[in-house]
Amino acid sequence: MIPAVSGEARAATAEVVSSDSWCTDAWLARALGHFAIDPCSNPRSLISANRHLSLENGDDGLVAEWSWSVFCNPPYSDPLPWAKRLASHHGPWVALVKSDPSTRWYKLLKLACTADAPFRHRLRFGRPDKRPMTANFPSHLFWRWWEPSADLTSHLWLPTYARDE
Image 1 (cartoon, rainbow, N blue to C red):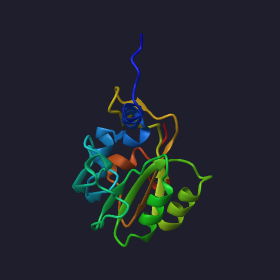
Image 2 (cartoon, helix red, strand yellow):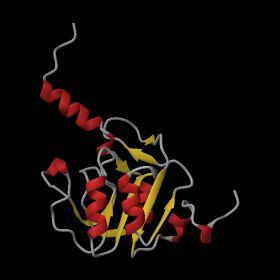
Image 3 (cartoon, rainbow, N blue to C red):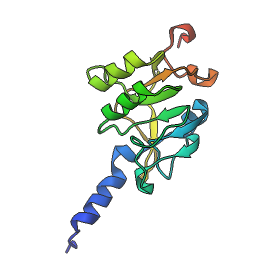
Image 4 (cartoon, one colour):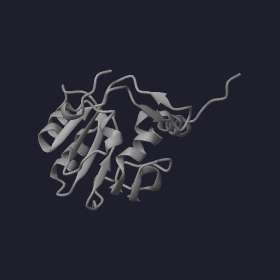
């Protein structure tokens, strides 16, 4: 017999396996560099930042005060409010999102950024419940007043860094 699971336990399990709580892979976290704040963080994050905000710790990164430089890998279930916040931020920022140009949030980031590029390959994300998993969608990096490292540019489709493969 399978024991009954309470609604609260089901919600907690769903939250753990939700793609909203997956982490940026270690190589990418290193290549991105250091930021003042990561408002969409979680306790397992590998992003280098002075301040990490996460729902698990009771933080609301959308309403919190943001420092100068921001790394944002927003919840893929609802990236629009994060895109709006990034577009109005007055400092440098980087947004790691799935590549979906048919959406309002993508168009908003495209208009607000100083540069952007899709990744040359599908990214892996760390999961709290299993081994890292390769995304089933392409990813895109948008940024304003920031420059990708040389290591990172080799993973992006940038016209000035294009190479034959």
